[in-house]
Image (cartoon, rainbow, N blue to C red; front, side):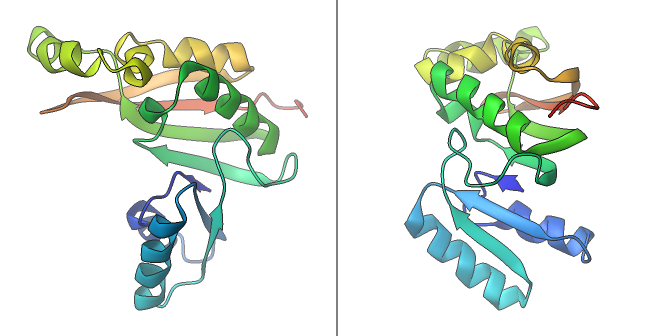
Length: 169
């Protein structure tokens, strides 16, 4: 599942990288999903695109092998981040992974300036303060890591991974 797939750029890349995998894109904006559908059709790929929110996932418990999300969580309120992480944990199969690319805590002095500006946006402040790993652990994830950080004009982009504990339903 590409959570918050937008116009499906990452979704299409995932399908091309793993052609045998069932790839799903989910987004809350129906107009964006129309653009995504046109892009998927243009590529001739078999990708499902679903309408829904990260904090009320339209999937059954323990049904997905992997969830990825790119630049979505900094748009969510703290409450909806927490709800989303709980939902992701619910729909992931035991032992499987969530991978997130999003704003993160600045990793050097140069990145503090854009992060000070972005961090003033209420939804992004949790990300810039480096709270996502703690939020993931509190939701019940294990093996939570920040695997990389990249400097951008908009601040630090962090890559996170978190695993649903084996045996957890």
